[in-house]
Length: 390
Image (cartoon, rainbow, N blue to C red; front, side, top):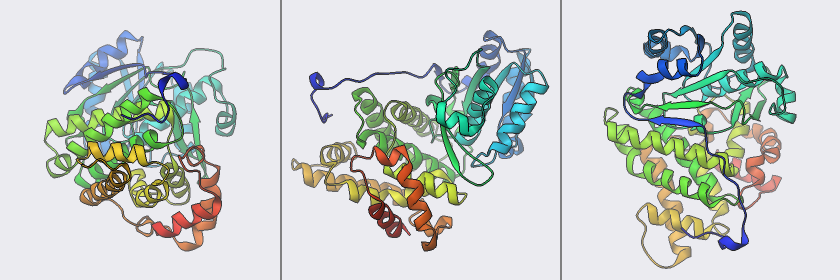
């Protein structure tokens, strides 16, 4: 790995996520782990799809078997809103819950994070966005997450995304209200359909890519990002083609987690800044909007990111000694990975129109991810990236 600056010229800090348990079948330990953290009555935050699939009841059964009374809250939508968060917080306060479990992808985990933040602080989402909650008194509710997809890595991050009633997305953070423990059981991802496997897998890859190539400095975050990209490159196509392949599913789950650690240390890039704006305007899967934007931001960044893109090319099988040539190979390899995965190629596929670009540009320009991109785009360049991605 080539660092942009020698170690004696940089400084950085590392905050690892709390306790994590990884392995096939480890979800069976959820009840005893929650009980050990003092749980007596848990609210299980999930989505209706996992209820219909029987997974929510299965996971709730592990809690109940350990003597933890459990109620399932399954109202979380693919892009969670403050309506669901408010309903969840009201239940937590009204019905005497002393523990929170999130089961699902990033949407359920993010919704549960924001519930924890509001429960601790009593603040509105606008107040939380401005000042956070880490200065609030009291003790956060006990909180364990069980991811059912391999994509967002939300179990490892301090951040959460949630929409208000007008569709505006809020990115809020809290060290105190992120999960106290995560259980990463790749067996839970075996039934994820191929297209969702592809979208969540590209989500994990692009998280790692954005973290590795942005303007922030953290060599340990870089190591996590590089390994995450390697794991996705080696396992995503197998997981799409054969969902029951536990080795590939395990590789993807670890990749997602490592990418989450990387973005918690370094943040993201303009692919994410532009994608967040898209998801404020239309409802779409995060990995799909990222996939549509990725090639255009890669090309925009290429001249600035040559050493990093060359490293990515090497881990994806590129050869040669010329850094510029390798960097171009890296861009081509990343686009080819997306195309083989079969995820979205154009923003029009998720409902974006040309008349939305002005609004999207204004939203994206304000985002921190856009601002820490290795080559910071101005408004005209952001608009051009959106037009190219249509």
